[in-house]
Amino acid sequence: MIIILALSTIAIGVLLLFVNREVLPPKDLTAERCEQENAPYLNSELSVEERVEDLLARMTEWEKIGQMVLIEKNSIRTLSDIQRYNIGALLSGGGAGPKINNEPLSWLQMISTFQAEAQKTCLKIPLLYGIDAVHGHANVLGATVFPHLTGLSATNDADLVRRVAEATAEEMAATGIYWNFAPNLDVVKDIRWGKAFETFGSDTARVSRLGVAYIHGLQDSSTGYYKVLANPKHYIGGGSMEYGTSRNEDFQIEEGNITLTDAEMRRIHLVPFANAIDEGARVIMVSTASWNGIINAANPYLLTDVLKGELGFTGFVVSDWYGVYQVAPTRYESLVTTINAGIDMVMTPFEYKDFMSNMQQAVANGDISNERLDDAVRRILRVKFETGLFDRPEATPEGLSVIGSAEHHTIALEAVRKSQVLLKNTKATLPLPVSVKKLVVSGASANNLGRQAGGWTSEWQGIDGDTSITGTTILEGIKETVSADTIVEYNQNGDFAASGELADIGIVVVGEKPYAEGWGDNPNPSLSPEDLSAIEKTKAVSKKLVVVIVSGRPLDISAYSEDWDAIVASWLPGAEGGGVADVLFGLHPFIGTLPFSWEI
Ligand code: BGC
Ligand code: BGC
Image (cartoon, rainbow, N blue to C red; front, side, top):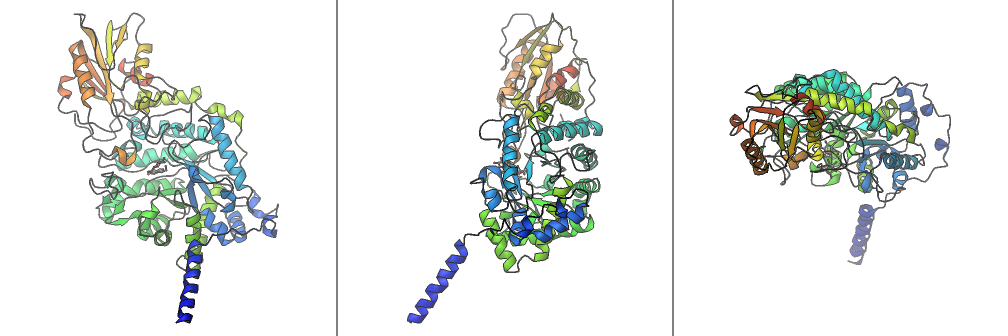
């Protein structure tokens, strides 16, 4: 009896030790492998593959595991954890900027501080730092805020899309960030999804063509390494998730299920990713969708057979926010399943200590093989070398002047002009004469840069009325465009004094408030009662009525549109509201075409 008791106490003790085991990194900074200044992997003359193999051969298992984790920077408990756990990659979640302020210099300093910490590790492997610069580097104060991809899609101008991405990459690189979680290549079949505005729309061919242009804009450079690493997402099929199938009780579509045959999945959704890979995409982010009941991150057919096998993808596969931990009841099982399915880097995005110990255990148990571990790390290192992380000169404060530069604002303005879609035009209402005598302007989106910019601006969800964006509202654009003699009256709610005489033109700018992801899932995207009231009141005091819609997707206006003389889809134009005014007044033609079908 006593023996049994003693034995079980020991067993429990051992078990507890195992569960709570503090995983200690090897303290071998003086080891020979750390001291080789002339190590081949540091030699930029050698090929990427030679450098990868040399570096991999020096790494401990602990260091390899560290390369596979992607952590939201605000969850780093103490800075030194970066070296202690050999963390390989960090990200800023939406709006997660420096603690002191949001100035570009603070961003640069923040990134440099993280990188300096990584330089204290034995092998000095630089961090990959990622961010959602999905319509410009719009988390950063003063950055150029471009139209979201829906608007860029409306331009259907691949060269322009390339230039927008290039400008974005320049602003990112100035802050020392070389990894953009963009472009979004989802092909959206249901505009009720909150991610619709992040995409090039519903047409596979257009998504492919513009997606490729965007990737070239981010990556191409004359240096031998990428300007900024592109990251097509979300692999795969999210645009066909069914309403009401979300695993998340707060959402309807996001994290939902897709019912498609293999042939449909390939025809509708795989094409943009296949093209992206052919044109140089090196990181693919996996969607949190499920396909016929299997979460994508746990699907070896999608990740290993199709992506890495058939498409010959040799870059790395990263999971989405908390995406891996949704597949099984325990984190251990989740990691084993998804890493074996083909995930190479895990956006945990919080817990790194438990990632490290679960992975160590999985390798020790043989649940994840050493070959799989090496394959994942090899892919990540390869992309780190290709991105020039070991070689490129450090970003300096002098380089920050490119952020929000006049050149970039000019590109943004061009994008806004070309993205305006004329949905209706009767009574020869548009273009408006610049010398119009009297204009009344109303609507909650008329003088609101936060609404023009939408989600993923300053904050994850964007900010209604954001005053931190550098730019021009549509109202300001109108005022700058009309003749000196034109009278422009503005009232947000359309409460204009009844003077007896009607205004020549009423312009009402209405639409959606900012949102992102599942929080934007909406059973019926439409106008609010306030918007409709502003339209009614403005119509009552105007000879002709123009309704401008600032939204990430088509809105249901079919019950009212007959009463409006002209209707314009402006999408989420971002900083340059003057571009909307330019086409309203005919200084530039309407050339935008619909990224989604829109029955008015
Ligand atoms: C989104 C991704 C984004 C990631 C990091 C996720 O919730 O689905 O599109 O890149 O967060 O912010
Ligand atoms: C982050 C985003 C992320 C989202 C996912 C937010 O807290 O800021 O980057 O996409 O969470 O739920």
